[in-house]
Image (cartoon, rainbow, N blue to C red):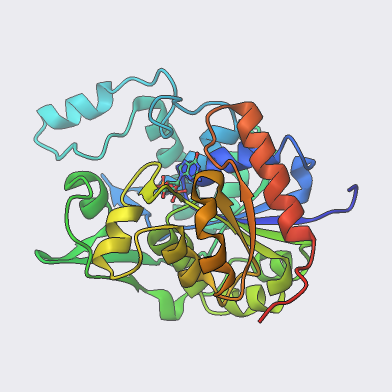
Length: 318
Ligand code: GDP
């Protein structure tokens, strides 16, 4: 266990909670999280990276436990005043949260890469896990809806994830290269885990960066995915609605089918154990476990099961 290297592909809240469990099982300096940046957006001239920030705040012990994002006990004086001055304030940025975005933006403007800015934020806030943005180039997730193509945060926050999703694209993806360390981390990992994150808007953008999916497939026997869908519904957010409107099975089977070429093992929730055979028919090994991360004990137990699944090579990978 002392040299074990673990990689987690991560979105926001689901991934952050999973990582809270994993740091109880593996020394944090042996964990690398490769984090989605397709949700990033600029507000008031500041670069906001919601998934990176959620993971940072969670692992630094700062996160607002009610929302799963933002800083606990944050105030909104700056945002309120911006509203008074006529600015849009639908994206809720607290005062202390704004300090993160000010600091990041200043670092980027002075020539730091997003990787470097992230490393500095992690070091100063005491995040023990290595966090890598998927890329240092700008990638922006665009959601195709009956009302047109929406920038991700317009779909997700401003319009409250109500629109049917007809398609998803990643602007800038063709020019995006994996951030330094990303491919090496995947190549050198003993276990790679796709966190219980949104498959379409959290994990898919990471895999779409040139070279990341190929690197993952070369390690496929040691790749496990944790289901974000329990009993046909998402624990949080629009993953179930997206499965439906994108034409997939609205179940863990739909997610497993979507991941089938990239993973060897699927961690299925115990309430869905009747789906085991359907997922095995996709050529995947199935591990059945309780996956609802209600508290530290459940988070730790899930991390143990997912890690064990990714470490052990399944008998047959088709
Ligand atoms: P976001 O970027 O903040 O929306 O976060 P993620 O993409 O990381 O996570 C969203 C996904 O995580 C949703 O599809 C949820 O269903 C899933 N999720 C959240 N909490 C849990 C949990 O406790 N267990 C499981 N299995 N999935 C979860």
